[in-house]
Image (cartoon, rainbow, N blue to C red; front, side):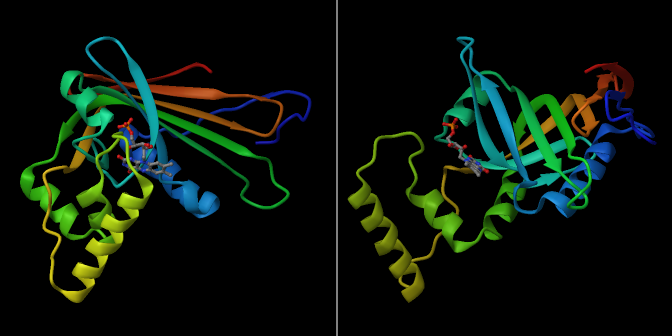
Length: 216
Ligand SMILES: Cc1cc2nc3c(=O)[nH]c(=O)nc-3n(C[C@H](O)[C@H](O)[C@H](O)COP(=O)(O)O)c2cc1C
């Protein structure tokens, strides 16, 4: 489509029936052009007091129903999810396909219900974590005050014991993996500096997805 440089209107075309299929298409394009940061997203949680907090996490998987991330049970996000499993995940992908092409801006917001994976699945994830992640998970008390010298010493000592083989790092109580089952998925697309964006919002009604274009 040729766009008017003064002002134009974006159009999302061929949006598939399942928003997670559409998510996969956006994700794969972002992987191709945005490189290192394409898996990062912003996760917002709220607790029973109505307090809201958001933070960056890494996308560790996705399926037809939603997305997966890894975290610690001693973190605020985990505690929030126990009180209120409704979460919101926002992905922002901005990239040019070629050096002189227009900037593409994609945002995807996934609203859904967070739930831990089964113990068996969590173990599978843990077993495949790199050593650095296992060390961090073993010593991290997320959000608690920490003395840097003590932290460094416990990190280095534990790493040495593991490398010598005198200690293994079995899965600890804190490590966990969360699946967010999407109930509302919102795609935003615009390209170039003077383009009115388009949005397609999917809502899960029963077990069927309904989609519509909405003003951006
Ligand atoms: C680039 C980046 C990636 C991160 N990935 C994760 C992650 O996958 N899981 C996680 O629990 N925290 C991750 N964090 C740390 C969180 O943003 C946050 O600081 C920490 O989990 C404590 O959050 P909470 O107290 O709100 O639960 C990441 C931070 C950054 C900057």
